[in-house]
Length: 545
Image (cartoon, rainbow, N blue to C red; front, top):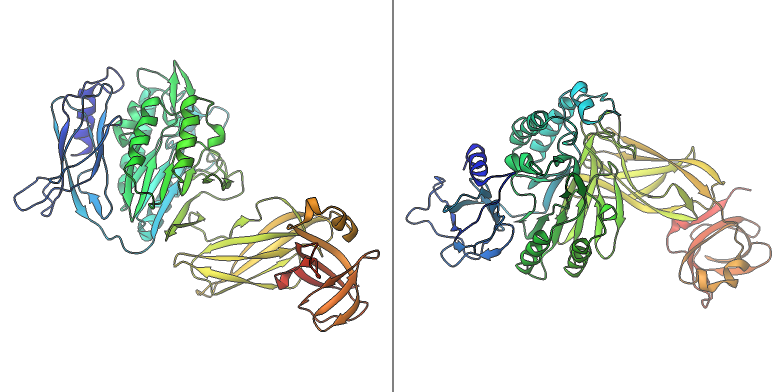
């Protein structure tokens, strides 16, 4: 069914106005071998495919047939695309009284890792004058067309398994005229989404909802269909949620009771060992305090989802690791087309690679290859931290250095798309204050890629005696000592003191002699002969005094 036909069906169904009663909605899901959109002799139905109207969730029978009960309020009938298959004529249909719905499918290659791109917060308006209708307090300094053209070029070259737009697709549906909002959605649909060769899925954002109950989500639905749904790809179940409700003209970040019940049914169709990725626009910290959201949180936690991925903040940030991993991604538009994202990253998008249940990602700036620092995630560092940074392409090696100091090699891994440098950082030998961390990837292309990030170094000033006196704080935790004097060296074993207290240090990796000064980071184990266990050579420093 063409987009035009879907729009006509939506108009017939009364989108944005009266709801439609669905009586005996049914149809068939089938493998369309000759790609003509019709179930022909010799073509077979797809058994156990999941179909829904947003209220009820059913499976197809052995012949690929399904039947949905009568449900008031249904706008769409949609397919949760099965693994190994792809829709050849769309995955959703606008509800039409008495219609039968067919979903022809083709096959797709399911080998290799799952690779997808997340584009969040595009906030599209064609020019600065139009943008000012959406945000009177902001001035568009960069027109979006160049960035969007670059996105199309890079994403089509990447050939991901899918692209997902996680909300705020247009500048703002609150304020501008309805005709203006319609034109922006139409431009994004025909001028951007349709140019991408990968399957594209959309997520509703707070700025995509018209604050008029008579319209609400109708313009979004006209172009992109259901606001909550699911699909399957390469053994992963993907769920899109819509936590937006209107109370008169006030927007509330909450799922509806119907959506919550739909999600319960949808997740019940997923085997326990299947990874689950959930997409929405707002981070959970912005959700309203409603009974539905509380139940949603419990449902996602109990399902042990792999990740919840969102946007809204125009910032790349890991919000939590438990009870599920939650990451909010930066914005395509940066700071609303005025400049880079609030976290300093440029206009861009996030690329994910998922293999054997492990999800990795990096930020990619459109039209540039820059280093993306994932960790350290805090501005101030004490004793030690973890370095994790990436650059697009293959890099066999990388080094980092503090300020103008010596370069230190760091381990690099590559997944075929980008390279990641990961290792421990030791800052005990740095003076308190501001310092610059520089990281250089030696790319196979021969052109190095250099990134820099400034940090503030804190010096706790704790003595060994302080650490020993408070095992309830330090036992089993990482500690650091910034200046120890070597009293004796017996091969790699040392005795060293900070003036008042002497400890044994086992397997010190550097050559030192009595009287030398060292700094040390390690795990504090008070019952061991060597109480500060330094498990990485980078945690041991010989100081120049």
